[in-house]
Image (cartoon, rainbow, N blue to C red; front, side):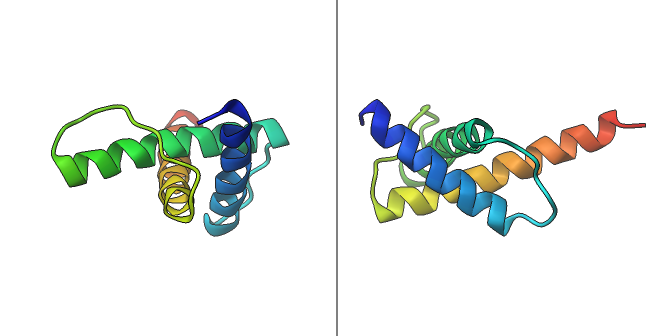
Length: 90
């Protein structure tokens, strides 16, 4: 997948995940794009683990199913981020 497709997928998946996840997430367009790209890798890796049984770092393709998997991965990434950041704040 080309770099432009990763940017578009990252922006779409990050924006949808930020809209789904409760609360206010203050980040820029770059932060939203990185959230979507990280979500694509988390979702792709979990999808590969569940379908094949092997743990391989994998991204998703630019399709509707790939976008859905990337959004799920981005929501998981947001949940993990806020779970760890909540413990660090006193």
